[in-house]
Image 1 (tube, rainbow over the protein chains, first blue to last red):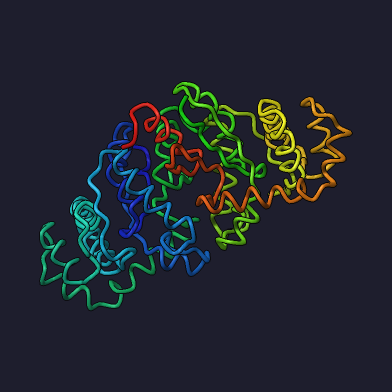
Image 2 (image 1 turned 60 degrees about the vertical axis):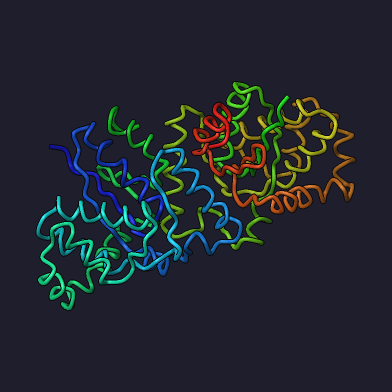
Length: 200
Length: 200
């Protein structure tokens, strides 16, 4: 079987959310799996000098409008959380803890997080919220609470983000297919051609 | 007849070039004209704190790859000029001088400039080059050379760019359809739907 597609995203990224709703089906059409890899764009921006979109003059206003319109264009439920962008460190920690045990459950969890923060506009930044969503996805809540006190679990978001930066990741969503990088939910069409006809 | 689509672009923008090869046909399918409006992104970035893509860590490397791949994906001739990004003030001055007399000729000129710098990778930054391209597009070269010494012609790129910023323009290509803004050649699909089905 061909290598899975690497799917890097930030839980606080609406464009990552849009991509998350489409990438598995796209990959499956071409016999591919998808490795979901949440990261923290805040750490990426420390390296690249980037800023969250809402903070950029002119572009910030446009981005908000574009996100709402893109959701309507794609037919996806989308509600802006009051606090945006928001922290997602707790959710990323829970994700990788789940991922080490069960990839399918971790993916269900990631989907549940995105459904909460952008499908319904809820605040998912608090650790208790991130944990409650994990419990609902089938996690052992007591074990998770213990794990979240361990240094390796706490450091995991930084470790994963640093590894992503090493591979060139600078935004969300960001995909790598057999070494070829694609940035943005608006590159899914190019990815589709890449997967169906091979490199071009 | 419906209002024309405003098409803002920088001659030094590959994504603007890609859009320039597709926008007139897209607009015509929906009974629209297109008002081509070259601007200087350098002046925009003074206001927004933006940077030319090649200067941004990680993103710059990706952008170069994405531009080449996008050209292949779209089936467009594309050669990277050795100097990139490059100045296009002279070309913008020539464009608006032509535009004041003959919109069709000005558009032919803009197409010729893009064909030179990205279709063939030529350096179009020198005034003599910009003027030679205008002459080939049918401009009165002697009259153009005189005009280019006039303050109003010299200031025109700044005037047009300032007016664009007032309308929210922060990148290239940037389109406005009946007040609705679309940024990027990868929004042509959303524009197509907007034009065919109305606002969504």
